[in-house]
Length: 179
Image (cartoon, rainbow, N blue to C red; front, side, top):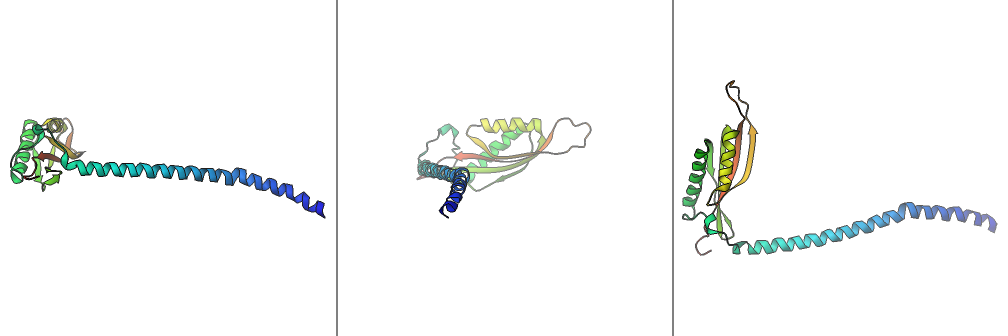
């Protein structure tokens, strides 16, 4: 009877060893690797959060080259100056703006960001020099959003690409008084 019980143990032990070797062991190794990856990711996130907080706390201390700043009186005068400069650049590029809309100024540290939204339907050949002129402008003008899509033209004499452009441009204004 004892011999009968002993004959069942080797196959059972071999089966348990196979299950451990091919299923449970690799799963535990994968679990440990995943835990290590999660810990690494947590440490990275913590470091990034600390960096973001440091950058945000220093945002008010950023010093910007005065040649890049719009120096008109803060508020509507600067908005008008930014809008006028954008219109001048459009005219110089041969671009006709179909819509110009100014948004409320936003504080960026101690500076003010003046945003202007523009729309135009034009030839691509007129839009590209305008976008280049915006990016090269001093005081600074930056394109923060840009959407361009082709517009079908059914004029047989028209050559080139006609596009609709929707963009948001901003200028950075002088620090607020007392800021």
